[in-house]
Image (cartoon, rainbow, N blue to C red; front, side):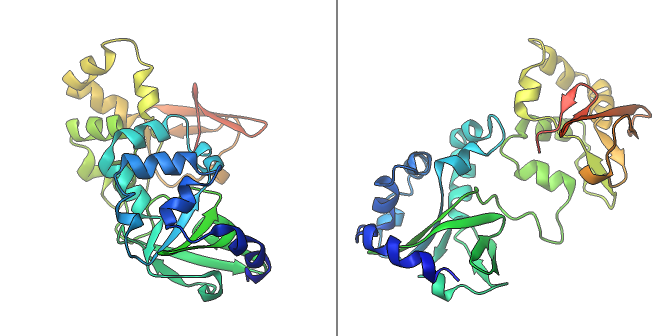
Length: 266
């Protein structure tokens, strides 16, 4: 499917390692810094072969506000995220097929979707293919490949635990001992405040909340609805009841969705 774009790209790729291709690319400065911060440059300069699905700087810019800084500050999460973009083996564009699963070094699988000349890796589109390296191949993609949440045992709680921008919410849920509840059958709709949202609270407020478990529990329950409410189910003026016997009011204006005074960012 990608043979039309391969010819013009291989010529310029050179025969450095996959790391060299990333380092020498003007559109992969964030990926370069991330690989170095995770100390994976040595590994990815090894014999391989490696297939790297390389998010561009614009792909990283598409993450929610503050997410990249949080990812870069947590080496374990950063390493897992980067390894989710690497396959141990040489997979050229001509080897890809619709519905194919590509295992990663993060022990997940990426799903290939091909429609005409468009090739997608999970939710990312391949925008440059077959940058041939001495130890593998690099494909440029337009989105960051977050670890797969599609496994059968995924719960709203496990998504929060796996999220690099919800560490405070995770700690609050654990402190209130609500993890088991949110791992139950549900269904639950969770309006999940990011770490930035918690950081915007007045000084000392978060510490006070964590020290007052009954109040913390009530506030957390105010973010949870007993039922499955997708974005397509929301309407302007709609009231969503919460587990603390209150309601949240939905406001929709030109594509912007607000839950009470908070904006939905994902």
